[in-house]
Image (cartoon, helix red, strand yellow):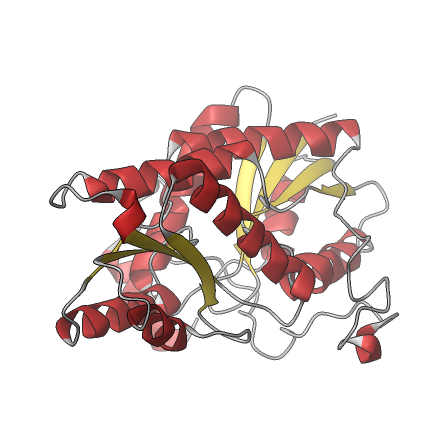
Length: 312
């Protein structure tokens, strides 16, 4: 039976973010090409949708798909939106099996990659004892405290493991504290330097805002504020995908549902207990047209102009 891997992205309004995502796709296609057909899709903003990607995989003879979320932490996208989409799509074909892998989450590869990004940034700065440095870890932020707590756990591990004077967590949206609020609180602590590491794969609207907040704080403070690069397509990230693929294949890709607000009555989120699994991207996701340019395949400018003219 022919098997495939579907890389499940979210989508972005920023061309640079989609370009980086497609670079990841190209690397994983080369990594797995001997055993799998690798394709990808988006929840919103971009083509192809998951449905379109699965359809072209199916037409190519793929009957077993391992869906790997290109998502760091298990908020509503990983717990609701992606499973809802995949369950719906699988229902279209009786002979098609889709197994969803786990999000990247807390693992040694992500921790090592965070250390690498921090150390890369430190090499560009003047020498300073880490005890005089504050670390701020920025997560995407969700309405799910289970996902937010994973970011806090990694913050604690980086703080204790690297010996910073202090470390704290902030979020780019839908969780407290926000980035600008966190930097104001850190300013009062008086650390000579603050290193901000965003836990993001690629550039995009949110990452640009984070960098803007750090730059503004650095301009208006007597202390130093710097930020690291996003995770990108580092080999450590590739190894994390290797791990998630193996888990999906062996049936051990389990989320931590012990503290999930949808499965347990978590304090402050009692109203979410037992909610039906329904995606919220139904009205904003892309339509069923293929993307303008596939990874590794150049498309003629005439073709792009025609698609743009037709609004597809």
